[in-house]
Length: 295
Image (tube, rainbow, N blue to C red; front, side, top):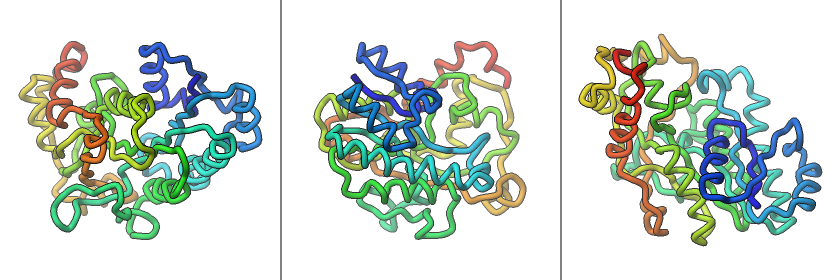
């Protein structure tokens, strides 16, 4: 049996969906029933239920975006940095392997050599490397808390997307924003991300940090061009003049825009589709929804 922490959230609900599709028995942990933020409560529950693997998909992202984290710092720190440490404590004590959903938002830009950031690189968009958003700072702290953890996967998600009609879907955000920031990023197809995370455990991949992103990088303008090419919309997209204008007019905290290297995951025998292919495929699936066209 799998234990799924944060099963009702955006990422957790996709884990629940995929686990069910694989006929893998799991138990979703809700804080209203099991206060997993309390190490003693989580410890007692795990001793009784004896899960063979735990997935931590809980965290604090802020709604509607990371700007909200600036006003809810205690909750953000608790969900992204303190909670992973408590789960580590319990899992290591009971000898239960586990996986933690982290983020690639602790990096900015590309490596000095022009490549994507590797798992071994130190974050350059964190409390130790300012400026950064409070959200990114806490996600970096969460990984520090897990440094040296035994039998633990750290899965870095980056700008999740698929075809589904949800405000957390990157492609829906692009369609709905009045103005966009031109930026280059790595991205993660949500369904492929979850499949790859589960494959890590099922295939016995070495524990550690993995950049779980679709190979390649995309720019915001490329995505809007693909939307027009795939006839998802007839909208004329408007862009901010630059990042300074974006910060002055639309944001209160800096954003992470970065490219991650996913070759470590491929070396482990787990492959995601190239970013452009995955995005175009999602756009075609979105097109089946008549409510999308003409946005």
